[in-house]
Figure: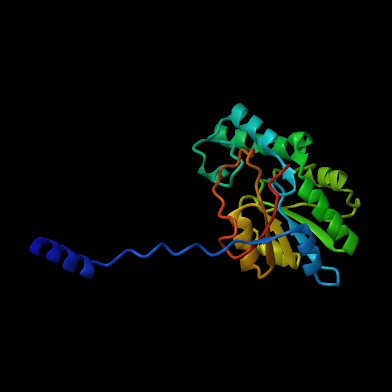
Length: 227
């Protein structure tokens, strides 16, 4: 009996772990809700390319198998200056030349990008594309995006930031709304003081850099992961 009393007394003084605080709810938005939320006047809109408007994994997968995973990555981790010798740097530049001029012929436009760009075209918004890809002196990506999304021949050319953050590019084009799949896209948008919308990355993408959808307070576009 005495032992039971001691046990009860000890339990009374033992702190009971409280349930872990639930993470903040992710703010999701539908295409219809997004449309209603836009201002009446035209705005400048910027899109990321890889895994946002185009499913580009075929080109990156080919590059990784051809040149090696230490040279080609769909993420942003590999930079030319980090490669150990000139031969690897040559292969790196060769891949990016092929990616920007040839391999996007095997990329697939995402259905959500078709809907979003059609929405912004109908409003008279100015549409830009900014990518962290490496520019090696020539590209057909602008031509492919114009063709796939029915953009005019004089629409702005794609801006390449060469693996650098996009904040300065966003500011230079005076963007007011951005779409991107990566955490970097969202962070750069916030730094540029523009509204970020998260487009979900396809589960089939070969870009395995982690994403934290909704973690920055951005709105996440529902069902946008499907190709």
